[in-house]
Image (cartoon, rainbow, N blue to C red; front, side, top):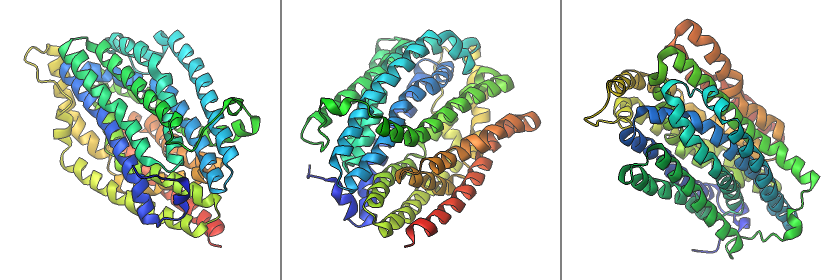
Length: 459
């Protein structure tokens, strides 16, 4: 593999650079998303549709703890990108050391709390009725492995901040492939059921951690921390926290949305309706992988060039990223509008020995999921502007506007809509809240991004 250094972020043509950064990020996100997707298909076909709903209940809790690592990673990586752009290597090293210490401390505390309150958390997130028992089995095993996930997510963003997207891609691929292989053996061959699905996921996290650790202790990384870098520094923690709080807030809102959606939909249609949302949730993770890949590729480019005061390159990176992401989003939109029924059917078992309850659940899902999917993704072509716009403020270290714009879609618009619309429109009100919030958030983000570019970069 050719030697790649961070200073190329400030010299290569933006279009070429964005492709070099975004394609590996997209592939990594694709493989991770495929992991979630295929994992759900395996679970649905080999265990049952209620098992998919059970995993959907656990995901917001485990993902929130894992997102602590991502928040610390993205917050610190913004500092690292700008420090490398300004040729301040010591600040980059100190930041990375503080990221490691902080991730270990915070996730250990959160996992301990999560295990202590397990019996209250699962019903709160919609794990009721037949969903509770399989959800608890999956939760206990997976949450124990989440600190490894948090360290992987933190390390992955730092790898990308160094300008080494191929290594970051491999780090994302390893747990996904490991999980799917273990799924086959633990669920299908050994018939371990939910325990098998949980252990497969946890082992995937550990494999990812092993690779990320290898990257940083090998010659591939520019960031060689020593013991004094691990000592927490208040000014670095403050900057990591202010920028990382954007990512953490976004994931916290996602967890709240899962809590609200699972409970609202359970009241509207029971376990089967939660299973419909579980499929929609998997597609929200999977289908937008190229857009998220462009966003991930954009972050270090914008951060590095902003730190180096190359404002024309920053501006070019914004518009190029929006263009590429919008094209990807439109292609995704077309596929989802044309094949929603076929997509939904992939998640459902066709075993000959299914119970009457499982048969009824599958029939309900096939009836409701296609129309729900079309509504949820109706505004997909325009979301590129919202995602890139919010990411720009995070990349350049402006935490407050980054936080507000990140929360605009899901926090300020979507949550109020799903609390209000179902009271008048029932199930339709839940699904129509998605495109309405997408449109409103994109309008707000476009306004603030345009104003920021004119004021800060046109000089």
